[in-house]
Amino acid sequence: MNIQAGHIISQIKQISGRIFERILSKRNIDAFNGAQGRILYVLWQEDYISLKELSDRTGLAATTLTSMTDRMESSGLVARIPDEGDRRKTKLALTDKARSLQSDYTAVSDQMNGIFYAGFSKEEILQCEAMLGRIYKNLKEYDSISSHHAEKG
Image (cartoon, rainbow, N blue to C red):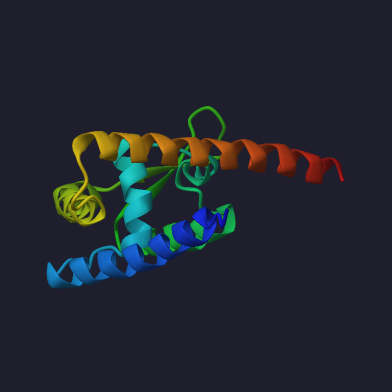
């Protein structure tokens, strides 16, 4: 049996990223790019979270997030707010500008879902989402275990 899930998922990520950027361009949405959209999506679900929490929820490395959020702060999409419980820490908060973009993101996301699941029945969509969720869970568990072992070194 020739199992290619990893390769297929990688290809899906590449192609869907290009399509997402193209849709943004066609809709004249230039306030954020696809990667920034992932960050905004998480913040639209829950505002005022740490970079660590954002990293966990987006799957992006903390170093990548730092430079991305710097650019997003410069363009007025997010603000760094001192953590009331620990002044050494900061939380990320959406600006009004970012909140106003949520409907644009939702429209693009809905269009992407239509492309992803063209020709799928509702049952097939639910099965696919469940299987992808299981793969994601397996990867997160492995990552947690392997990073823990790496720290012990």
